[in-house]
Image 1: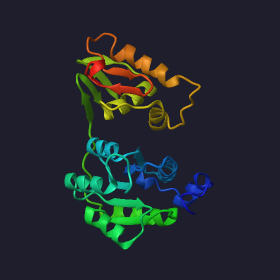
Image 2: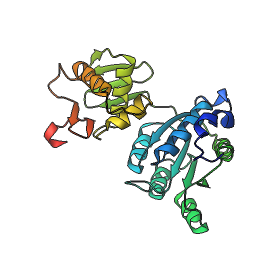
Image 3: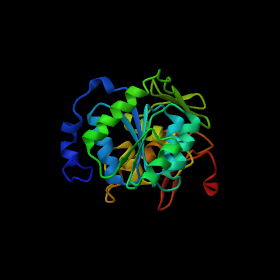
Image 4: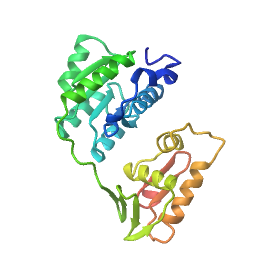
Length: 255
């Protein structure tokens, strides 16, 4: 079964199978082709892995720096920072984390470039999910050293998020959020000072496609503003007209 199979998202669970022992394994997927990223995410999560998706190299590096992952799956041709430079930077930060490169470039020189950058394995698109799954298991087994403790908090300006307790405070004052509000704020805090489009928020927070005929994201942004910003002189949640939203402690005109 190739990743471009239009029925892949319906059958991927059968390919990956059930594997409850992998629930705490976190995989970062860095892939700018949305269809491929969705198939990887859905297939791995059906199999018990936890995943996060980045659609460009810069976003992938930000997620890697703020979370703990046991495996990286990355395309080579990526917007902003390409996969080879990204791989080198990840290797500089963490020499041990397994990295699996996915690419349409299949020559020997291309593979050598990937390995020279620090990749542990290399697959050429289109690939078979069963082979991908086998390679993931081999890489995880090879790199099964003690896993660092995941972060327990996120901080931005005077905003504090206690991750295990899912508690939020601003300037030491507790902020009560609904689960959806919390997930939205968490994603914005993981990606500060970066404009997040409505489409990205819908995909990453709600795991759905954004319907331009609805305003549910704007509604939740307004909910957050009332709870996070209303009683504080410095506003953190800003709108970029026609682009999306950004978490920043800078003035709106500076963003």
